[in-house]
Length: 375
Length: 259
Image (cartoon, rainbow over all chains, first blue to last red):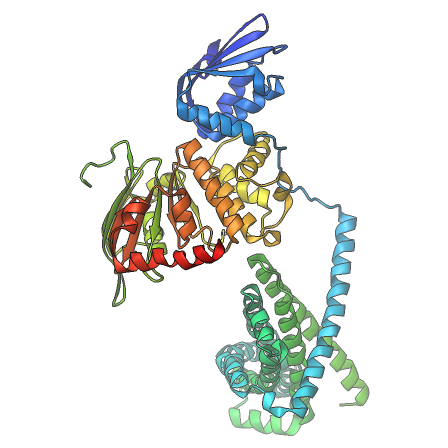
């Protein structure tokens, strides 16, 4: 019998077998028990007697494996006789036999091939675009309703959103644009120094920071900071059915949740970009006075002379457009959350990715348009 | 009564539990024992700290004072390893099921098998199917996501998951509170059948009078931070405490109307 004997002993005699069970038949020993059972397969089963007098413990998993094995060997139901079992174990075997008519249930195995993955992803993107366009329409009509009934506007909510989007973001926006100003001035300075053209650093830093770097960087920061927050907040509200509650109370979720955020972020982003302009120029100024011997007064004087007003204005004009895209994407992705925790995470990630991509695409569009307009 | 340590029949000893949140005292010396194979219900008004007590028993929330011995292990003075071994020996069913929402039903039930046993991979699917059937669910439920299930089915899946590792004691936190009466009674019957057949100790936190009257061996009533009654349903009903009287009389008019 060897190893098998520590779990069971099988005696077969002309068609009827006796299976004596021994030891602790528990989940933790199930691997060994399954192995032992293989050696106790009755051939041509006319009936089998299960002797449980040596059984110390039995749980449902072990009971199930035993019954499944016997059934697989053809010793179903009535051909099985129990003998010498503890009443509790007998009850358990009865329960297992009642409930065991069940096919195995495997975890899902959904490995699509590359081609269908590409197809599914493409369709997802197209569907997303369509949904976004529809959402823009809904928000636009709610904004029109707001024009007719200005009392609907939620001033308090808007101000509180403005605080978190704008005021709380000032330190990080200033820090990042300051550092970019430092890096840009330093690298540009290395080049201009070779030609003794130090003063042209001012032209370069002024134009780059005000027109491109500050708007772009600040928009990316706000997309990551506030865009993600919008999606997570609205998504969690969706999960907890708060959005349904808002609708049931006769309010419009767009009026309550989306428009305050949209207005707040559109007001906040130009201000943050302005802060970014100042911080970026300050960073450039610092490098200029340290490395390039351009004093602060001469930096400012030169800036005055060479920086066209259009450069910062272009930056400030772009900002609310970026902001509107971020808000629309973030709010829509929040509304699209399904009722589970994973979907909040996925949609938040997607918001940040979509917002940043759109900010950069829009920036390119602006660059071309302004070029053609000669600004 | 509490001095005996881990004798064979007492699976849970709660002794002198005190819980304070800031200035509020939730429990002020709660003590009781639970013996193996009993179905015990813990009742009490809202805010009497029933769920908090369960969290303290299973080692999720540290009480301000007092000891909990669960299956012979002192929960609050044992190390991480001991606590983790202990956690494989009991099951917990949270109020709304607490299924992992990113996994299918079958994967949810397979989690304890994969994490805590060395079962051969080909044994897991049949066992998952069996656990589903044990919890009274059809096998095709396995492919669904938790979000697609009704409340009653979610509770059953959670029960199947809680039973996966063959626990010796099962904690249920208001398992029937979100269910319609028919599903709730079916769930109760299931718990009783499993308890009888598996010798399982069941500790239920509940508001549901029908649960109490149909399947429970013993009731513990928590009020004002203390155990104010402890015994069979009949004994507790006769105890004469005003809260207990109100609680049981809440049923009477509904019963008359219903018939």
